[in-house]
Length: 390
Image (cartoon, rainbow, N blue to C red; front, side, top):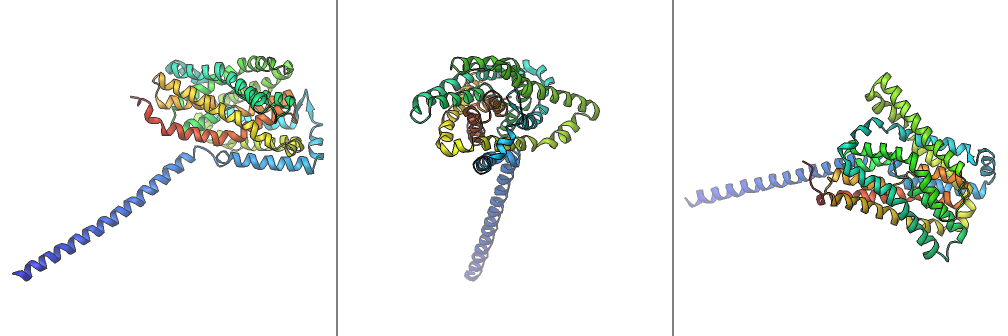
C-alpha cells in the first residue's frame, strides 16, 4: 500500500515537472513571439520614413563636409558655377530646387479642400499657429539670441543675415514631410491632407508680406521683385505643375496608378536634389565655415527652441479644445517643421549662396529630422492625454 502511494506521488511529481517544463517552453516561445511582433511594429513605423529621410541628418552632415572640402581645396568649382546666374538666382541651384519641390507638390490633392468644414477647429489651430504666431516667435527668439545672447560671438552684420534666414524658415510651414510625421503619430490622413493643401494656398498670399514686414523692421534691404520672383519660381510653378500632373495622369491612368506607381518614382528625387544643393551651398561657404565653425551650433540653438515651442503651442491648444490625438499631433507637426526647401531657395535668391541667411536656412535642414523625431516620440507617449475618438 505504502509503495503504491509512493509511486503515485512520484508519478504526479514527474507529471508536474513535465507541465512546468512545457509552461516554461511556452513562456519562452511567447516571449520570442512578442519580441518579433514588437520588432515588426517598429519596422512598420520606420517604413513611414524612407532610407534617405531616416538618416537625413547624416547625409546633410556629409554633404556639408564635401561642400566645405570643395570650397577650400577646389575653389575653381564654385567660381565656375557662379557664372550661371539670372536675376540673382543660380540656375543650377534653381533646377535642383525644382527637383526638390515638384515631387512634394504631387502629393497635394486640392480636391481635399472640400473637406475643410469637417475639422474646423483643427484647421483654426493650424492656421493661427502657422501664420499669426510662428513667424513672430521665430523672429523674437532669433533676435534675442543673435543680438543679445550671442552678441560677443557673432558680428552684427552676420547676425542680421542669420536673423533673415531664421525669418524665412519661420514664415514657411512644412508641407510634404508632414505626411511622414503624421503617419508616424497615426494622424488622421484626410485631415493632414487638408492641412497641407490649405497651407500651400496660404503661402501664395502670406509668405511675401510676412517676410517683407519682419525683414523690414530689422533694417534688412528687401529686393521686392526678387522675393516675388522666388515665390513664383519655387511655389507657384511647382504647385501648378504638381496639380496639372495629378489631374492629367489621374484622368488617363486612374488615381490608384498615380498614387502607387507615379509618385513613388520620385521618392528619392527630393532628398537627392536637396543633398546636391547643400554641396553647392557649402562649397561657396567653405572658407567662412572653416573660420567660424561654432556659428553652426549658435544658429541651431534658436531654431531648436522655436521648433519645440511651436509644437507645444499647437499641441496643447488642440488638447484644450478637446480635439482627438489624430488631429492634434499633425497640427503640432506642421507648425513645428519648416518648408526648408522654400526657405533655402528664397535665401539664395535674396542674399546669395555665400550669405549668412542661406547658411541659417541650411542649419534648419540639419536639425529638422532629429528634432521632429523627438516630437513624434513625445506625441506618441502622450496619446493618453487626449480623448479617444468615437
